[in-house]
Length: 339
Ligand code: MRU
Image (cartoon, rainbow, N blue to C red; front, side, top):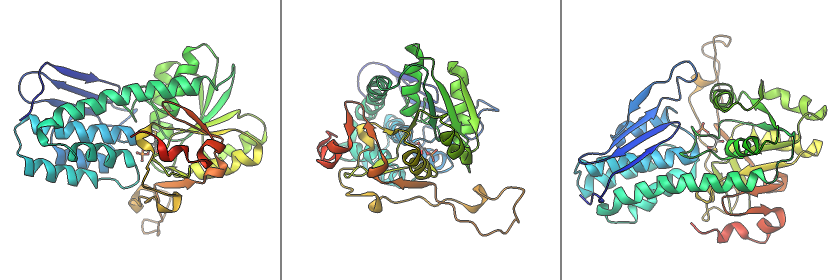
């Protein structure tokens, strides 16, 4: 079944992929257990991968696209037929609705004969690393010495195969000796900031302080935030951007306090078929993610996992090959981004 010549392996913070002779192997770090436990799970079966993506064991827009593609590569390497592979791909494509990177990666495979899926999936993984490098380079150039940057959710090596999106920018600025410090939003309800971003920043030795999400306004009012950097799960052609719930509130606060607010994302997050934020599907998740031991067990819950920030609140879009201004975006720059 179209196995390319030579060995291939990718080892990142949250993923281990290896193809030598025979079936390819894929393991992922279970992000539900971090930071308490570092448990690696086998994830060669697309049905299992679909479940891990839905449960957020594997998460972050670029990462779920790469993992879906690599699990299909594993299935192809085991000799699955075209019908099976295409059915698995269609199932994975639906695993989560908001991050366009998932559909983007799966559609790249579906557009090809299955004999080329292994090679294409591996190319998607390799590209993600390069896209992260581009964002890190472009974004770090904007960060000045000593800046205090606020970020939301997790956008680092766990959310991509490379250095990350917004967190990759912070990492590069830190490596450049800019003495930055980071305000990390906890990111209720699943605490991607408190659990995952804090863990990554600690490993990288980047100074940070964890804050509850609702502290952002007070910090900005006191002049303690120089910049907000966040990722995105889907960017519409007009620049509106969906990201983890709470991002919109940060953008409103940033505008009120005159703090620059940037979206950091690769080209795979730009949805050229999506005219504006109103057309972005927003994932609704289970009530139990919001109810804690403090709430009545039957408390009615509304749990949108993402919100949409209108383009007018965004200072710039830091992409892998460009930094777009409001004027660039208003003139249609996102419509012509190469896929
Ligand atoms: O529900 P999650 O944890 O997958 O949400 C992730 C985010 O919202 C990130 O900010 C986004 O994927 C962009 S960064 C890679």
